[in-house]
Image (tube, rainbow, N blue to C red; front, side, top):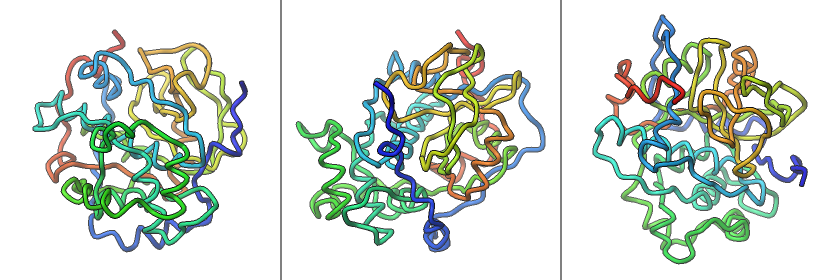
Amino acid sequence: MPVDLSNLGGWRADDGHVAIASTMPSLVSAPLYAAKPSKPILLYKAWKDVLGKYPDYPSQEIGDCTSFGHAHANDLRECVEICLGEPSEYRETDTEFIYGMSRKIAGILGAFDGSYGAAAVKAMTQVGIVSREMLGANGAYSGQRAKSWGYYGPPAEVEAMAAPFKTHGVAKVSYVQQAISILWSGCPFTICSSQGFTLQRDKNGFCQPSGRWDHCMFVCGWRPNPEGFLICQSWGPNSPQGPLDLDQPPFSFWCDPQTMQSILNAGDSWAIISSPDFIKKKRKLPASFTKAA
């Protein structure tokens, strides 16, 4: 069935993220290394190392892509930390809470879908997150719950549950070299923009820029040849279609650096970090993160 992009985006392209970002005390400076690595950075391999497979995330059902991008980037961040020996445990992040809380923070609760990346990371750092496990039997993704929490805000008791689980901080991602540096330090990052793509991968797993998506996704890999960034999608486990390369997840595609810079120019792309030390230096990434097999 064709994907209806008009219903399955959800980033608000009205510059509301600018004011929200200006009020984030948890904002830290992202790393910027002068060099590029000689090998690819395949952070997405952490899912396989920790979970034994890539997650089979469901497709978003409403315009809640900002919560999918930030929650799933946070899931992968947990797996990367585990692989690097950090004191972390994997718990799948609940998307509906991030969605509802981001809209509450942005002052946009109500009938119309959508949110901002800046509002999502502000919710994660100042209010906290909850896992699907914490919600018990009702923890599986529900578009209906996302709609309700996006209209009224999450229940007070769930907000109280999130309080002990604030993420440490966020770094704004503005330039391609900065994006490579952030990945090299072991952090995936989210992207929010109006840049669209085809939904057919080429022989190297790339999708070509095309059309408009007001959309949030996240980035979890970089390759030197052909150079590109690996973007993960939220439209089900097999979107886009076409060849896969470097053992990429089936819900991902590669993007050329020029298009990535255009995305970053929208000013709503964020790395979610767990501690000040996590982005201060190039991390010695596991060997599995730099090779396809």
